[in-house]
Length: 319
Length: 287
Image 1 (cartoon, each protein chain N blue to C red):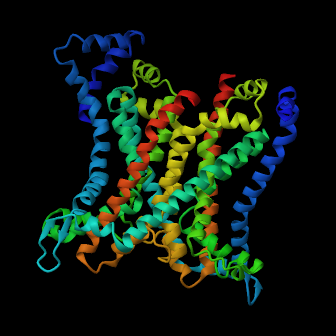
Image 2 (cartoon, each protein chain N blue to C red):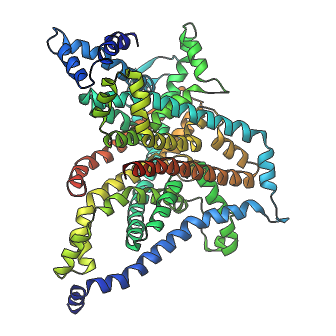
């Protein structure tokens, strides 16, 4: 703060009485011929950004760094001595934990595909209706439902389709063998917040599909299906894949909905990490949780890198 | 082939006839899927198999001491997160946009990185760091660690939530800054003799209001519904209480879930009104 005032001090006195237009010039004039202009400028620029970088280093860098480091550290419970090894990562990729990781990937892939397709269909239906009031209502409803995830969502679904749920009792779903506390139940619940998220994400891209393109295709004799097959979808593809990546990441990271709804009956990596963390039985268990977390980060990174080149392509057409 | 010719000669006619039906069916199915759980949950809270229609769940829920405590904690955590996030991000992004364009990519990547690290992974790292407490017993850091984990207001949650809200804040502030001619605004303010703080508070911030409001509301909604981090770190905000109460009283927790939906809805309504009101005003003044 002191640096800022010392630099500001001459400004009000010099600028206030003079014509406003002269001020920027004067500032530039004092800055350019000086022997150390760069340093002087730097002095007041950096204080504003230092807190942000310090915060990131402590609150994000420290936990993330600890995760990466401890994932490769094994603590001997007897002696307390620690050594570097791949033991944790190997355990985290085998047996029940491998099943959990694979379950999470499957669930995320399936829900991402469904959410992308359904979200696009709903978005296109909203646009096609051409009703701006309807569009406004659906966009705001999507905002609400996209944020309605975690514990509240789990309870809403338990009340609807759970063992004593309203719809279960009404339609006697138990006789059909349906159970909410399964993989299928989780897909149903996840789509409840993922489809609205996709609608919000994809609407701007759908807006970019110009009516002129459609008219041009139609006047060349293309049917509606042909238009979408050869023009609409190829243009939208990068945005749709980008949306699918976002959907995958959202589903992959979510823990609360599954934890509250199914407990541990469906093996998912997020639930296994939470169990390992709260287990507090073994010292090594915590490092195992960190190794599983590291695996999650690696998968998320792999999936997100797919999106980067795609985004560039979609910006060219729909920007 | 005949069909194709038909669409070519009368594209408008076929479109008008065909489209509304398809979209109508899609929207109807979506409406059923999204409204059914809400309606069923509301019915679940007021329907007792033995007594029939009753508001017992709401009476019990509102009478529970845990509700006020946990909801209060959630709101305080949310407000603290929003305050910290804005204090960090607004000056940083304004200065980066104005003077340090080289850092733009770095700040963007740093703000988006929390999207790659799922909350459960982040909190696994955080709880490991917090477990160093015993080793630091002799140092001044010990008090910091205790303060961070204070049961009545766990500051560590504010820090983690702030990290988790960075993507929302970055996106909305970035969109807001792009829509402004920041350089001209700041130069005009400075040349009229405003100090840097005054420029930031009285010129830049009012122009960024819609962006600030939307970032803040999205972060607040995230914090109010957050379960994973709070549960692992042993705090009891609203969503953790909701699950806790559900172990004995399923109806009460469903009622709480509906309350949470209502809160989200109210917050986002507030957002559209605040941001929309601003846009309307601007249009009026330019017209």
